[in-house]
Image (cartoon, rainbow, N blue to C red; front, side, top):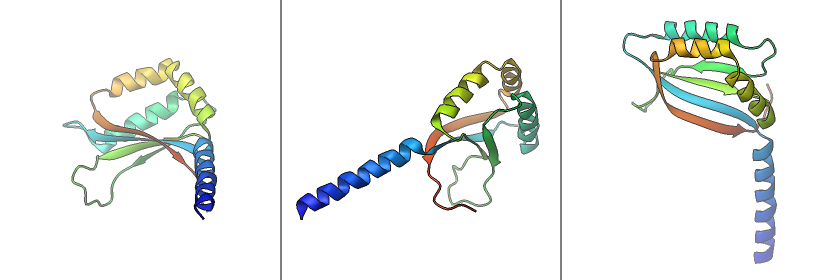
Length: 129
């Protein structure tokens, strides 16, 4: 019985490690607005940022704002980005770091927000729409 338990545990661990390594990377950045700034400033930045990206950039992005929460420390918004795979993410980071137009937009936006939460998750789709 014990051997069966360990065998099943090893199989499940193998599947979970495999699922993690093949998951879609999703990046969450939690930010708060600086004094005198608003979500309109964030959306203006997002428009300039999008225009600075390469035409076929494989990055998907969302700005998420809380509708309700029981946590008083919830950020004003989350910037959420995703790629189809870890290798695409790596190539995307490299291309973004080399993109002078994007760097200029980022410099212009500095000081508008404070982003204290920065997390990369691996997601596995369990149901399609």
